Image (cartoon, rainbow, N blue to C red):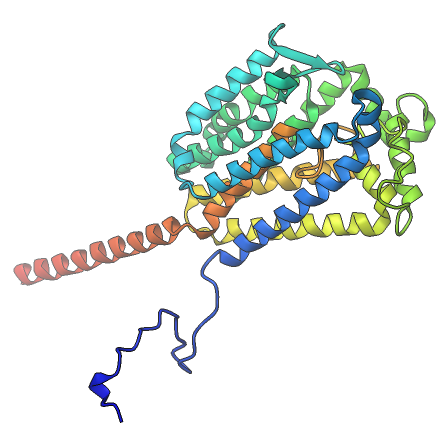
Length: 423
């Protein structure tokens, strides 16, 4: 028999053991489960979107460009760019965004101004929202403005936490974080993107603990502003009237809303089958972008819509958990704002397609055709992935506790020494 000292040394196990039974613990660390859920749901939504984008746009692409794959090939390029951005930002410490908040905001404001300049911005369907770059690809600075506003407001709150406690400070914060970008976006005009930006900033303010009366005042001012914007533009007023009764003018102002409802009603429970949509042949406008939900309801039926909503609900839950679990203030506010961007866009798009909200022209995140929107959403999800497993918040909290304990101990010792001297 071999002696014990001649036996090879045992390799030390790196698995965590349970103090009760001594068995390895397979529980993931903080944020790992949410990170995995975000990655999985994002992958499923992107694949879901590519399939439905091809099905919805194939007819238009074939008749206009002699290739049914024209739009989906462009979308694949944006998917690759977005996935790379998501992977890179998931490895960049989210604290970097606090330093980049002001330069990013300035860059976005320059882009929003450039869109309005003739010869730089491109007008499509009466809206000047795009800057055309090489290969005919269009960039929308307004999509990046939503993320920039969230980063800026979160950085300002963390820099001066008591700013939101006074009316003057709150108004100053709103004036810097919302007003400049919103005014430039409304000049394009783009009411839907403005609403999403405001919703995202409000989510950041709620996560920061802003007083309810300030938030109610902001919401009331926003509602009055929206009503004023609707009153000064005839087409917005028509959309509002159409929202209450789209069948009053089904061939005019209510055409898009009624065709969306017809698409969803035609699908019933199980749909007419993938690729068998009739509405995509020129009946439903913007069938690959703003109204892709109608094509999903027609081809995949109620089942397809329920699956889509279930994916968004799961993604929202995972993102909300990331924001809730983050102990560092800037990361918490940033995660709350990014979550509101994704959830707000999805709610507005689906609500408009179902006739529950007025039409505003907001794409369905991760599903609709559109390069800039897809890349910005994937980039935001990359930031969330970094927040989910970043140890910065736990280290900061631990350091603060140790510092307070040290000061408390020092104070007690000094007070005891003073008492002895006085005695």
